[in-house]
Length: 60
Ligand SMILES: [Zn+2]
Image (cartoon, rainbow, N blue to C red; front, side, top):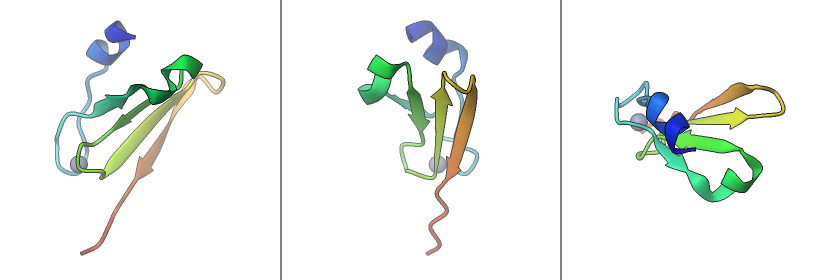
C-alpha cells in the first residue's frame, strides 16, 4: 500500500495539490485518492483493474 501511494503520487488537475489517500476502504483494496480541497477524486477498483475519476466542479 505504501509503495503504491508513493509510486503513483499524483496531483489534482484543478489546483495541483498532491492527492491524499483515503485509507478507510483499504480493507477492500479499494484505494481512493482525493484532492485536499475536494476538487477531484480518483478510485482504484481492483475488480475492474482500473481507475474511476470523479471531478467535483463546484461553481462559485
Ligand atoms: Zn484540487
